[in-house]
Structures are given as structure tokens and as C-alpha cells.
Amino acid sequence: MSKQQQKKRSRQKKTRKKGGGGGGGGLVGVAAAVVVLGLAWLLVWPSWWPFSGNSSASVPVDCEQALQDMAGAVAFKDSKPFRALNLANAVLSGPGPAACSLQHSEERFLLFSRAADVYSHMKMYPHAIKLRLKGLQALDHLQQQQKQPQKHADDPVVNTALERVAQAAALATDMYLNFEYDDALGVLESTLQQYPQQQQQQQQQQQQDVSVLPSEARAVLLQLQSTIYECKGDLPTSLMLFEEALKQPGVRPTLRVMQQHYDLLQRTADLPNMPTSVRDAMLSRLRSLGQLLTGHGPWASVQQLPRTFIPELVSEPQQPSSSSSSSSSSSSIATAPWHDPSEHRGVQRAAQLLREHTDALKREFEGIKERGLLLPERECIHDATIPSGTWMRYESTAYWRPHASGSNCSRDTPVACRLLNTLRNETGLHVLRVGYSALGPRAVLKPHYGMTNGQLKLHLGLDVPTREEGGGEDGDGGEARGVDGVGSGGGEGKEGTVPCAFLKVGDEVRSWATGQVLFFDDSFLHSVNNTCTRERTVFQVVFAHPDAVALAQARRSASNGVGDDSGEHVREAGLDETLRSLLFGSIGDDGGDSGAWAAIPDH
Image (cartoon, rainbow, N blue to C red; front, side, top):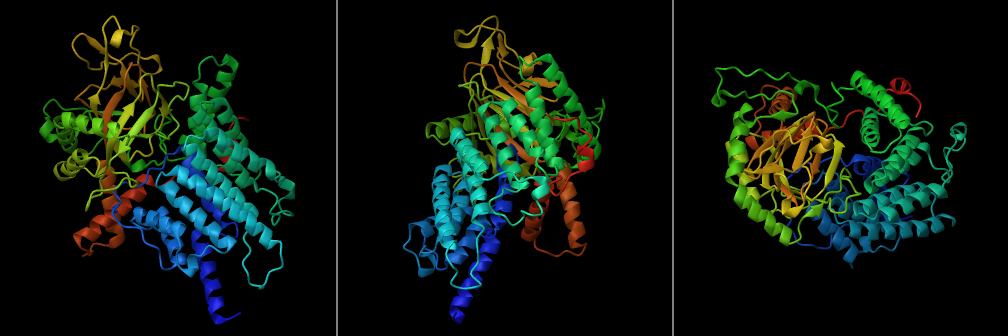
């Protein structure tokens, strides 16, 4: 073999290692992605990350570098996801240089799977699905090639069986995120049937047998099936599959998995028309699991079980003093489901700015809705059995939206973006993201937890319908009822009307009103019920908990030392990184208390 050939093979090996391509490494990466994307859709990417969507597509000079760039962008190591999209388009559209000739099956598989990751990352699921299928075809061809004698002893051998499982999981994930639930289930069922279940007593002898599906991989596929059935509205089947995944030999449940189990078990136990004995058994298991979570995890209460929990933020609400005024509001915010904007000077100013922008924001929302820019929410917490109960959103700060030049905010929503800048400049709040949310008539969002207690939310009512007293809106009769059958809880409405769109956080139900602001902590258990006969629209502002910002600043200072003389821009970027890690880091993903888990009653 010539030196040039040896050098090229060395580069290919490095590319596979970095990208998780060959040797079964991709299964671990895809499995982690499936758990994050498929099981709860709770991971929110840092939407303040800057990028420009105005770069032009050009054929990359180095195919291997393009692979690394695409992988880096998906992992947010690269700050320009649109650049990765352009790279994917260029590599696939050709003709490209010799390095991207796509003549080798392994190279085709790497390119197709990596480009599919980029398209999925940018919410372009139909494109991702097509590329996943092409990648699977390349794997089939590669598998046939590997049955032939190798030309060189050091030729790498891709574990095509494990890669096929990984790509099948990724394909099913893209399909269900594209609302192709039955097709996604078909892919998973076919994959599970193709590979026999690995028996615990055979694990030592069969570790190298690629025809046997490892228990951990089987658990990932079962959990993904569970997620899809929940999206379809079949909670009992979803719970059954989730618990089957937990029983796989050698699978150790983490605190994160325990929290997901509690969440799913809670929603299933709340179903109507369930036999009393079955409900009682579920509630008993729910209590046992809740005790384990609060006893072995960081959480203080089962009423507040977000994916990421920061114990340092837990504090008791302060009793208001008769001599206090809004001008002397605290810089700290106590732990509670609901808050009054006057509790914090910055939040009070933010609420005022939001109210002043009600009409302009409403007009902007109507414009993006007419242009078809709203996206259906893929977090499967809405009741899928209600045809009209859609949930549509537009995230102005989302990374997949083309941003205005020199901005990290969408060029489609200039009003929201100007307001975002004003909020950041005038309130002192660390605003993470802003966007519009539209909930269809009769829509129900099932009880769920937010992602972290390190963020708080403001909702401005843009178009909130009400129901006439003693009758119904648009002639629709019936009593206005809140979430879980609870009353309106003192919501506001027009004179002679009653509210019909409700938000329950903790044990208290409130209602939105046009031009009014609600301030709450969504890390507490919360649910939504729009009993109105038309859509409810709000503008949402999500900002970092002020105490979380102070904690991140303290950690940043401690890591840099007192004598940090970095420039302001560098310090701000470092703070963003520390804050993002604090707010969106995961709990218990690296292990679990199997002894504690064993104390849960049998499933």
C-alpha cells in the first residue's frame, strides 16, 4: 500500500471515530439521541446561540472535513447550523471532488447518515427520512462487500448489524417527528423481529455475535415504541412498552428514566373509565416511585420534577410586608408555581412592555399564520384523540429559523425581535427565547413538567376567547370548566363573560386574558385546557431564573479566578456557556440507584 493510500485510510478512521460511524459507535450516539428526542422531547436547544442563515451553498473541498463540520454543527460545537445544511446540500448535489465521489459503500453510508442528522436537526424531517433510507441501502451493499475477502488486512470493518439498528432507530425517530406514527412503528417492529433477544445467561458467549441485539439497544427501541404510542394517544400500551424496556437484562434505570416512568405512569393513572383496582395499583406504584425520586434524587417534591433540577434555587416564598412597595421588589424569586410580576422589578418592567406590544404582536402573529410558518408542536403531551386540539408554535429565537443579519432572532418576526432586544436591555433579565403559541379549540395538554427549574415564563394573551355567561361562545352552550374539571379560579374576562381557556400549575388554575400577563414556573406539574370553540393565542417569554444567573456567575468566577481580565464579550460568552450547562444539563444519565429501583413494587 502506498503512503498516500495509508494516509487516506488513516483520515477515514479518524472521521468514523469523530462521527460515530463504524464499529458500532454510532449505536451509542443514536441511542442517546433517541432517548432525548424520542422519550420526552424535553431537551431544548440553547436558542440564544448565534448563527447566520445567509451563507451560500458551495461544494466543500474536503469530504472528510465536511463530515466533521456537519457532525460538529449537530452537536452545537459549530455555531452555524445553516452552514452544515449547506454542506449537506453540496455533498449530496455533487459533482464534488474525488474525495466525495460516493464510490464506496462505507463513504455513502457516512455521508447519507450524517446529512440526515443535519436535516433532522433543522426540522426537515421528510429530507432526513429519504437520506436514512439511502443510508440503509448503502449498509446493505456494504454488508455484501464485507462477505468478500478483504484486500488489505487493516481495512476497517463496520459492524453493519449494529449500525442498521442505530439507523433504524434514527429513521423511526424522524418518522414519528414527521407524524408518520404507523410507519415508525413498522420500522421498529421489523428491527426487533430481525434480531433475537439476547438472553442474560448467553451474554458472555455472544458479545461478539452481531446477529444478537444487545439488551441496551433493545431497551432503546422499546422506549421509542413507547413514545410513539403515547403520541398516538394509547397510554396503556405506551406504559407497557416502557416497563418492558426497564426489564431488559442488564439495563440499569437512571434517575432520568425513573422520572420519565413517573411522568408516564401519572398520566396513565389519570385516564377515565379505568377499573378501580387497576387505578389503585398504579397509584400505589406511583407513590413508591415518587418516594424514591425525592429520596435518592435532587428533587424536593413530586409536584416539581423537571428534567434538570437545581436544588440551590429552592427557597420559601417571603411574606409581603405592609410597608413594601413594587419599587422595592426583591431581586430574588422564591419557589412557587405562580408569581406576581410585581415580585421582581425586572419582571414588572417586562410585563409592562409586553402589555404595550399586545396589538403589534397580535398583528405579527396573524401574518406568520397566514404565511403558513407555524409548526405543529411535536412534544406529545396534547390529547391526540381530539381532532381540533392542535398545538402550533413559532419560536422566534429557534436555531432552525433564518435569522436577521447580525441577530439571533428570526427575520420573519421583527416585532418580536425588537421586543426581545428591549427586554434584554431594559429589564436586566437573561431572556432565553421568545415565540408564539396557538392552542386549537377543545385542545388539552396533559399534565407534565417543564425542562428545568432554572427558567421562568411569562405569557401575554394575544387572542383569548371567552364564553358568554349562561350560554356559549358563537352559540355554543355549556358550562366553562377548567383543567381536570376544576373551575376558572378567578380568571379575567370581558364584562358579562366567563373565561374558557385555563392553565393549571401546581394546584391552582388560572385563565389567560387578552392583553394580560401570567407569570409562572413550568417546572411544576402543569396542564392546559382550552374549552373554547376557537383558538387561544399567547406570546411567550422564557428567561433564566435570576438566582440561576447569579449561581452561574459565581461558578464562572470561581473557575476563572479573581484575576480574570478577559474582555466583556468573552466573559458574556463564558457566562452563557456556564448558564446553559446549569439550566439544561441532565440528571442521572450516567447511572442509577439499582438498589433503590428494586424497592419499587413489581410491574
